[in-house]
Length: 386
Ligand SMILES: *Cc1c(COP(=O)(O)O)cnc(C)c1O
Image 1 (cartoon, rainbow, N blue to C red):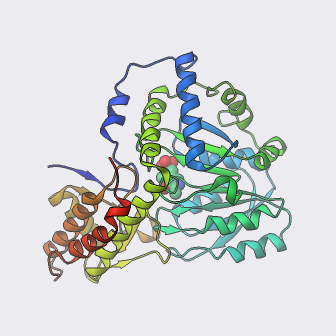
Image 2: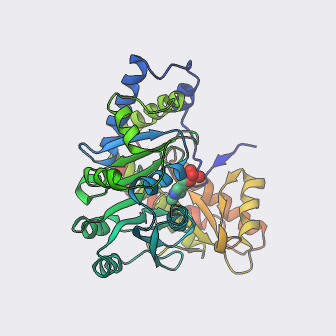
Image 3: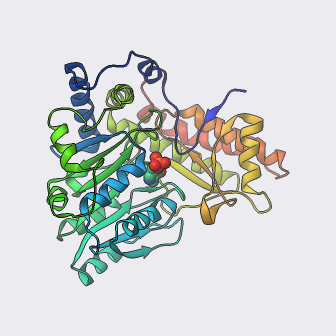
């Protein structure tokens, strides 16, 4: 059966990126590698919208890059704020605990987004907070955070702002310099369209000062070593050169389409998906939905995992289920990176047919039609060029 990978990571890899992965392995301490590394960092800076913040590449998944941010900015006993509203944002708290940092949890209902004013209040009451940890898109709920507003608040304090943008960068707007983001965490297997195993971080001047002050133990992920290597267009340890070559291909694709167009395409596709889902009488979980992943509550009486399994087994559309407290309660559809109009239509069609298979009464084509109407209304302005 033909498969449609529509999970919120890993995400599909475009043909030219797969071809790049088949190139001969090169050594990472060579002029040839240096040129590729420099081009990748330059491209990432364009996508991150930063003039001169450092960009470090790591052979790890996104969680490794998250750990690097905690290890490099906090000492045991330091105070942090952690905004928690899902499985991924809770990871920031677990990491703080692992490094002995004290954190103030700012807990929000799963599916909701934090009110930036609450962060301002906590920072005023706790002027000794060193780091604020946030998540641009909470992948477990599909909720988006107003990072711009939080950035403005944190920039006026002595604290630094760390943003998990693993499912946000390359999907929605990220203005690292303009919003004052100090550490931005990214991963390769979401909107960057490469296989899992590559993460990168973007570090500001303000964060660099904290890196020198932090006393947490660190070795592999030490930003000081990473900086020395990056200044030579290298990584501190063996670079995953083949993945980085693939990443360069993906970045070329993103820049070729244009960052603004890529963001508009994600907004259009996920907007069409949400419209289609709601036309079927289903509910989108998040109040402020992100454009890379859509969490959907199935209708009463239809178990989410049966729906997910039917979509996969009968129609080859691979979507994700819920995690932790949302296990068995939602399905999550990824629309990141190499995703276009007909992927959304395929997902909606599989969703409709699976609902009917499971005994839910719905007019076939209702969701697809609603989505097509959204897609056609704006198609001329926002169509993916390639
Ligand atoms: C995927 C993801 C990560 C990284 O997870 P890994 O499995 O370590 O790659 C981190 N944060 C968010 C929000 C994610 O979606």
